[in-house]
Length: 426
Image: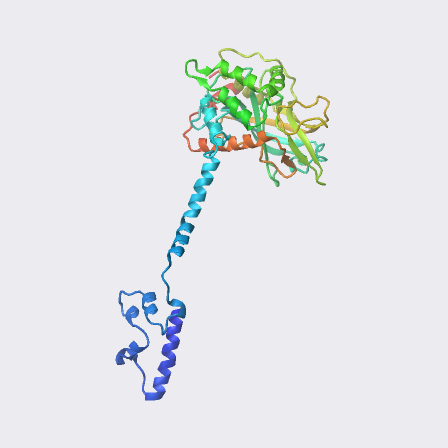
């Protein structure tokens, strides 16, 4: 546009001058005098380009149109600029994948170890693969508002989507009374950020950090000859990780309840509650059932007895738990989930969870949710517990992988839910 404007200005000024000098109208394309002022090629359909023509005629082209050929050093700098970004990205991916430090614990390494430990994959979660969706709401008691400004502790009837599962890698594994059970929740205040939490029924986690997690998964590698983990590997893990023995013994003594409805689920990791005035309090929390806990009477031969009982219970009446916050005492260890806290720590009843609906994961509302423990609202912060980062990274990698895979039907199908709610065995 600037060039066209200059052309028009040049022609206009010279045209006026010639008219005054000759007393006749100046018509460049008839007199041929236009060639003195600018090359006509671009306007006459010549194949030459306009920038090229202007570069040859300094009378109307910009003064800085002349270009000097780039020297060897300038070319090298240009090529360096071209390759620098992709090279940096490639190096970053290698670093993130552990390419420069084979012993580093990465997401891919944990996924590979879970696979070797018998994780099924194929569109299912790599751990806690067998589950079912539930929904309901949470009513705050207001007793935790002094510790945290999180909306969930101030509001009543906060919508909840959840998931009950077994801590197994196989989605079609038979239910076992002694298998670790889990409750995962997504609490969604209408006008505030949501809160996600994943809890298990053992009271303490017998792992301290990413290295412990990796070593444990490696010890559970499936022996092709037996189809089960090698007992020698499992024993060796205990021998080489003596600091985890108290936590393992505590879990071995846990009470095994009759099912999900009367079970207690623990956060395992520590978190920091932040009050409105900025005061911080370290806590662990647990969902404690309102139903009396009954001993397990596991039914041999029924692969889905735990889920069948859950379906029957939740259709019989809403299931409820108290959210109990345990405040860390002076000697409780915050950054190590394998450490058992004192039994006389202060506890606060933060509210009541009510679950009154259950659906299969085949199209259910919890199927595509990652219950990442680091999805926290203002008022709840992660502690320095390293397992929190391990869980978050592993859940995200598991989600990315299963999102791209074709998934088969769940063990807990819509038909099983329908039949169990009617008291029939499909």
